[in-house]
Image (cartoon, rainbow, N blue to C red):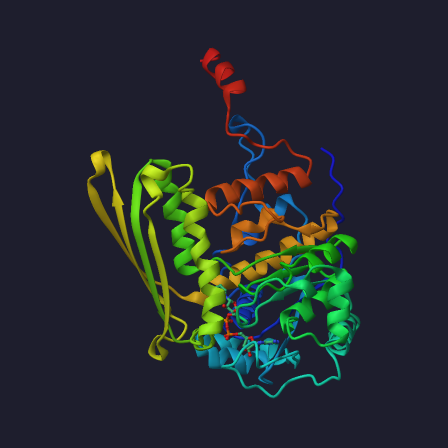
Length: 441
Ligand SMILES: NC(=O)c1ccc[n+]([C@@H]2O[C@H](COP(=O)([O-])OP(=O)(O)OC[C@H]3O[C@@H](n4cnc5c(N)ncnc54)[C@H](O)[C@@H]3O)[C@@H](O)[C@H]2O)c1
């Protein structure tokens, strides 16, 4: 077998703009796993396995034994936040993990202090932190973030660095002229163009330094022509947008099943209540709009009403998010799905998911950090569509329809790993060896 992946030697720096509920839950989990206090459940890189070759070969290694990933012991965490709380204080405030657990990893968490953030209140009205960079232009802010990355790399002796946006959801904006080319974008940085958001500043700084960038929020960020071009030019992987957790995860598990059995869907009403800081930010209509767009696209793409108008052309899809402090990070979602079957007879499905948002998101951040680092070592650059598995609104090449079906996304992810490692891709056809098997009976 031939592969051209560089081994994962030395330390990997994982930098996160945004050190709130998701980021602290991930870092705390890794610290707990390293101490033998918890299991990395929900993480494909740590717990998943992959079939290789024909079914008859019985080869099913763990993913982390198959592809060269950075070991948890070799990861160093860092990041930025508009609040100056260290990771321990932030994790206590986020109230995702029990205090007894946090105390056992207090030292590791306390050591991680946020660097000063690039922040613009016009993008996130509901936040008011003071741990913020001040500079004459957005271009100077880029330089400051690049300095942060390089200083972090040197201080922690990192061989490689990746960045995962775990910051709040910025207000809704659409691609405009300043986002179209690298030149226009750079000019926009010098002019402090208001259409360049803080998350774009982090992404630009990362890509300039060849640092892979994954976007866990639904903001445009690196999903603009200028940064896609920059990623290609600097040979850097990018991926996004919006971690696929909770209700959307359920949707992309259930909808492909209904569609596979040619069952019709008339309506899908989804509502959520959550009370964490994410919920507070999303309580503002401009920020909610960014999330809504990300959540709504899922069903259309899976069901493709243009191809199956008899089954899905009337589909009414509604998504609501309500800020409800008593629930904290324990988001509750309700889905009412009106489906129809043989001869048009109606049925209903109700889902009440009492989930823990950050518990579902944390393993995604870890996996993305490790897979983005792998992609870079495998010389893959630009949009990493094979990581769609992790996103609500997968970034794809312009004009391409994203794939939302979680099972197709998994096949693509696994085949990409096989491809990287020079293994045969699996088509699930099996006919080539099925006949032989019958004949030997
Ligand atoms: N929890 C989930 O299941 C989930 C799922 C999908 C997407 N997301 C997204 O992930 C992000 C993080 O979620 P969370 O629950 O941790 O939210 P959170 O509010 O707890 O944490 C976000 C942190 O980002 C910080 N921040 C905001 N703007 C920043 C900037 N410009 N620079 C640096 N820091 C900044 C905030 O101060 C806050 O501490 C949100 O955008 C959320 O929408 C979360």
